[in-house]
Image 1 (spheres, rainbow, N blue to C red):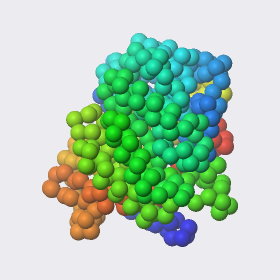
Image 2 (cartoon, rainbow, N blue to C red):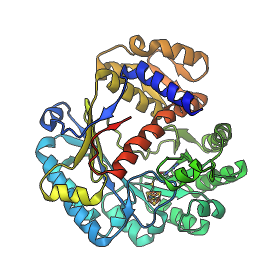
Image 3 (cartoon, rainbow, N blue to C red):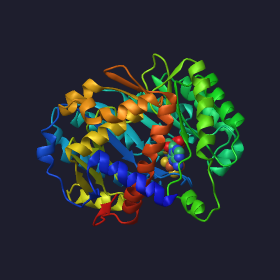
Length: 430
Ligand SMILES: C[S@@+](CC[C@H](N)C(=O)[O-])C[C@H]1O[C@@H](n2cnc3c(N)ncnc32)[C@H](O)[C@@H]1O
Ligand code: SF4
């Protein structure tokens, strides 16, 4: 099975990117050149602190400490200053604050960072923020809204105490429902809740109940993820020793179809592979524009023909910026084939796209480049092609994404795992 997965990965990679190997190197990209290339951009800000470390979570984070967080805020402000001339007056049309748990810094650094972003850049968009249910008392919700944040996401994860226990979440069902209730009534444009399915021994009925409760509570969006097992997490270690098992792929497909039925029935529409949003609500999502800069430890930036990542380690990030240096650890120059494959990857994630957008972005005809794959997929009922628009069917969304997962989980395991082990790796081959 492992051999087969490796073979599929290497075949698909060669077909789509024409590369034998994709490797990130510790080379500083020529930022002046790359920043000339575009008109607008998005900003991602990473807050790498949490009050506890969850055993399934792949993200870059460490335990929150107020002194470290205050130093971190100063370092992020220096990083913003280093970008100020490069970005100049280009409008920022997407701003996302993720983590870790951004609400750990709600009263210690986050307001200061946001003020600095507004002073330095021309921000013309809504702000999206990830939050932890334990931080959502009324006073904190007021503070979040006063910062100008209008899209809020809450890591609910499960609505059964036994699964919250497996996930080692530090709250019970009653607490998390109260937090969601307060957030829904706090006047945000969109409240998203994250839930995880495919948990050990989870039943279809439990998944159904969780979906129904969230709809009845009036949330605007649900992001329902199957439990992914990342190799360098606690669950990943346990899975290696056969001590832990998530649900099989067909069981997860069934659970997702139960959720699709509930959400479509309640007037939601699919807005990405895993997200369902009430019609007429602006969706909660990560950076929405194709080109973006990632601020903070582990922030990743994508600038048309280059991708680069900051060091993951907070102390190293703070040190680099203290010395006036960009904290970039690894970068990758992207060939046109890689850019096109990356574009396709994200459009599949969003489940719909226009071939004419591909033409605008790359000056090439979509059908000439990818047409030979689209026909068979359409025959298999994985997508609908109306000439310009391609829309993935529910079946296509699941199976094409299962294929993408073969890459994402492997690449994230190698790249993030490598950067968690060493703050300045020599090279990471994907
Ligand atoms: C940065 S966290 C959310 C905010 C906050 N830190 C919290 O935990 O409440 C991002 C979300 O990714 C999802 N997630 C994390 N690890 C996952 C995994 N291994 N499989 C599926 N979803 C996962 C969870 O739903 C989680 O809420
Ligand atoms: S799931 Fe959230 S709280 Fe838990 S470790 Fe990950 S980022 Fe932190």
